[in-house]
Length: 204
Image: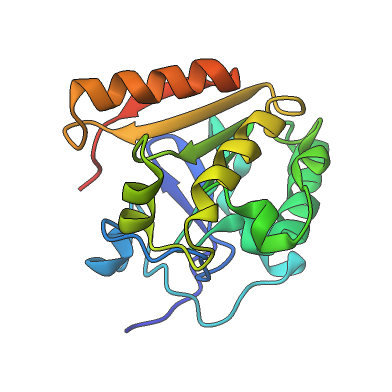
């Protein structure tokens, strides 16, 4: 496995931030099982986890002003480094005032041992959570969370609570991976939670 220090990289017209390679899941479909990079990045496997100064330097070098949105998403679960994520989000808002999105597996409360959603208020504009399936058992088969079957229900609770502090909370599934009936069940879950449901295209 080649390693580099790609901290900030472009996908479409958004700037993505790669904080960590750690993740509470080992998803059967994860892109990092078959590739080393995404979008206009170099290798996303990190030589070491970047500190605050390294991340802000990477953002300044990338020129955040050129991008529509800043997204915390890399080859790992960004809430594994939630304290740094929030600190960097404050830097982005204070210096660039760009919309900020967090792409997450929704297990951040389990990872951090506390409810992290209140810390997002006023900083995070969108939280995009991978729902994957409406079934708890199937969810665990797919994501193989270290937290076991509790992860599915914790993810749903995370989404519902996040909606109190974040303007746009989205649960996603990937098109072609679910039946129409399963998608309808996902839509019903999202309606009950008071969040948006989005069927997103598979990224190859």
